[in-house]
Length: 356
Image (cartoon, rainbow, N blue to C red; front, side, top):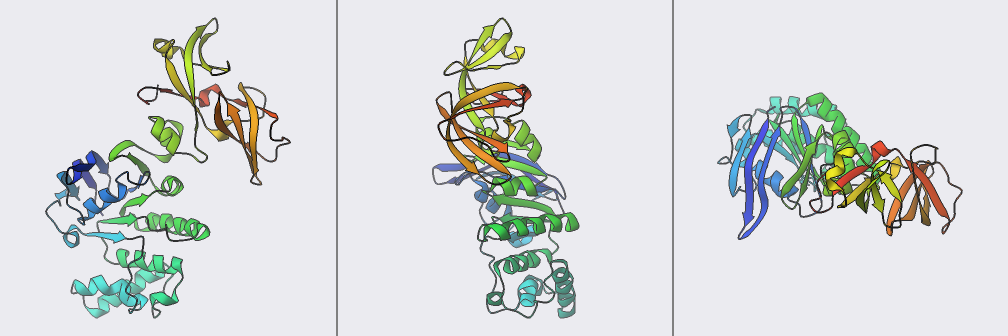
């Protein structure tokens, strides 16, 4: 195991720079997820760490050693790809032990290592099968087993679950998390799925346009997003972001929404009096219970999911979502009235997008 340090990392393809001076410290044994929309640079960053792409500038250290000049094999990392990359003509055992064979390890030690890891991944009854005889989840476990047998300094995962169906993704997500808790190897996991990132990782790195927007524990990103991008990206359904204006009243500062609805604000925002802001409210923080601030609007869509009901309604001229527990006796076109705890309301600078 080893720490991974990235300092001032840049990557350009010709005149186009796609990674803009990234700095990131990953501790020994930590599981870190890189997440963001398509084209944000997360896979490129992973490929640079692995040595599959050269950095244009900056430094990468693995276990305290600068590895920029080392090829992928010399970096002592193992990578698990989206497409499994298994040899179809080899058995599970031979696929898992192939890299050990290339390194010159003797047959007896290879067999012992493969059997040990196969038992860990519940593949011990499948060692004589070939990839074509396995399910998608089993092939993904073989790919992980091939990475584990090398006992690398770090695991790099490049969207390993994207080819699986929804049910299998949930199962494999649990297996990857359980596996990390057992082997405790430093892991860097790339995904476009924020649910995967939030449930798997010790810390999540949110990327946009080749820049890091925020790094933190999943709960911190959810409760205190640094900016509008993170606020809108983290959470399903995404946070409701509504334009407002700060005004002073007899009861203190208020955020006035289009149409006249108001939300109380902290006195610390007095410098923003008469300035435009954006208020954020998570759909799941709305309630039909008494207490809190009342928000209302005309219902435009009702989506019952069983345990919850997702209601889309008009709020200050924008489409907003409320997630309410259980069923709701409401029809499209009727007014929806919900409450929210003022402490759950987020405020952002409209111009810069930064949290206030």
